[in-house]
Length: 196
Ligand SMILES: [Zn+2]
Image (cartoon, rainbow, N blue to C red; front, side):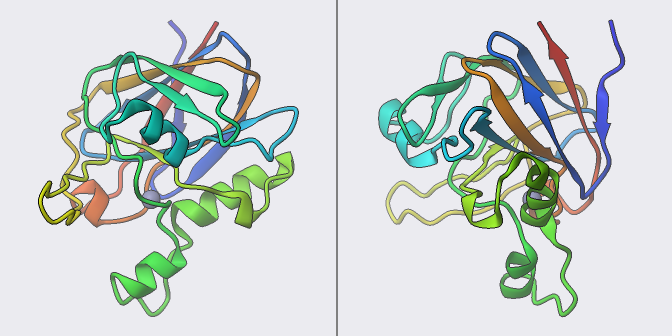
């Protein structure tokens, strides 16, 4: 068993994932969110789509057996294992503006959005091409009557994981989320592994 890669707190990475390879995203300490993006490697205008995926699933909470679709309705990733069962696919990556508008920060961190933009730039992804991310371990319950959303502590405990299988050759963006509210008040690392 190889050592997992580590994404330090409040940072992000990008890497390629070949069709058929498996990506395991691990929460090593518990209660830490990881924002995941996937782009088609041969044309980064094709990207995971929350709207398409939730439409086809007819559910907002996705887990083992669910498929993440692109804006062109191709399957990009399958969720093949999941020890948590609660992730979010509604909210955009946290950003400078998130921290300014929601937290009132006067000198805000660039957030997952800025971390993803920086990591994905070498692959030809511009800021305006970044969509809603699949937010691993993010816990966003919805009031079924009013539609009100709240951001609650993740249900993930130390060592919990979600495993994806690539259904195309992809570029992946992945973060250790930078928003206090999403991570129950502290910033922790995220681990990931890639296997054939
Ligand atoms: Zn974030």
